[in-house]
Image (cartoon, rainbow, N blue to C red; front, side, top):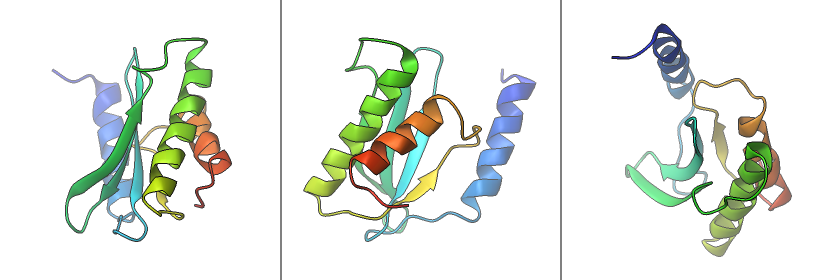
Length: 114
């Protein structure tokens, strides 16, 4: 039982996904927001595999936006360990604002380019 808001977000995400593809060289950074946590993962769409992931479930200090920034920094660290420097950002149908923006800024601070 999805709400109208969730249906609209999924439609926006499908529209974005028709244009954004991740590869092994340049994976897709996917962001998902729930009410309790924020998740990020790097995905190689060609092979259909998740390269690495991170979430705010491990970080439980401070406001949600600060936690999201930590997730961005952590995903950037994991990506650089696997020699990934460039990514494609997939905001998951959410506005580029708040927690989604903080993940992106944290990933950029961590050294990822997009």
